[in-house]
Length: 423
Ligand code: ADP
Image 1 (tube, rainbow, N blue to C red):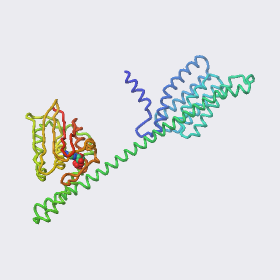
Image 2 (image 1 turned 120 degrees about the horizontal axis):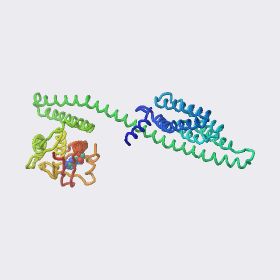
Image 3 (image 1 turned 135 degrees about the vertical axis):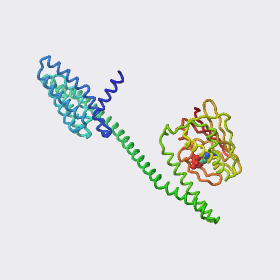
Image 4 (image 1 turned 135 degrees about the horizontal axis):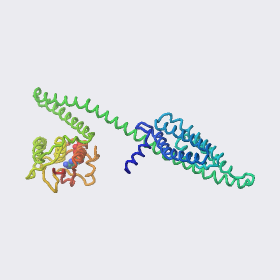
């Protein structure tokens, strides 16, 4: 019940505001909706009281006010002809001033509310100054009108005028500066948000170009260089050159695929599969062992005696395993060994990849997981590094409610820990 009143109130305050209403208009509509919420019932109650007190002219004025309120409410709700609002405000002020002057019914105090409405409505500072000056002057005149002017001295008159005018002016100036600070800040924020969303659109556009216009020709180069190397060219020197083209194309294609991965959103739940991590690693290792053999590196595995069931998107976790073992190969010396271990501990599955390579300095161990990390290094055989692989591993592990961490000593080697919840 409480919640529904809150929801009702907030949807009432939002009426007339939609997603493309500019920020300035949103503030105005919101504020006026708030005023109507109190002013309409108040004006109605005053109308009833005046009517039963036989003050018919006053009740006529109240009816007029109510009609104006309804009209203004309709304007804001429809979000149409909002430029009529200043005129409506001026009419309300005039009605307030005249009824206070002629009927001495205290309605001049309502003028304070119209000063606040004025700060919301008038964006031009001179218009606002003129408006508040008129209200303040009218306020002073109404208060002095209640005195018997023949009996008060000039000094007393001046004192009373200053006493009323001074707080009103301070009040108006403070409101003006409050609006200035608040609106300027909000305006900057809006501008920044729209710049960010434009930059995001531009980035997506660029990535689409990369996907369509760069990936396909590279794949063709790769396929053709494979055919030329295997079927046409027998000459070793030419074969080496073609191998060079093939390596360059593979490297560029890997980078493009990595770039695309960094831009991926959350994983589709239907792609998760219950998998035995032992069997999964067995399936990944042969291709990686071929790669490792180029540096005469041995990959040794130590699997868990029992199946290790985890819930994973297989091609994503294969990407993590490939990235980590490729790094281990890249940063290990010739003729060394890499150990791959799977085990379980307290409802968690662990995959550890250990090498005896160049290691990572303590101060860089957190930074290596940043996208395009600045602490990237070349491999022990001069292999290229883009500094993307580990950030992708981190992203994939987060998508699996898992983690990837490192323990390392410089010049001794590194151990990467992949942790996944057990099914
Ligand atoms: P890339 O795959 O392009 O090399 P990564 O994000 O995988 O980028 O790695 C970032 C950096 O982390 C590497 O350039 C390297 O400095 C460091 N690093 C990663 N794995 C290892 C490792 N096994 N041994 C030593 N340094 C490593």
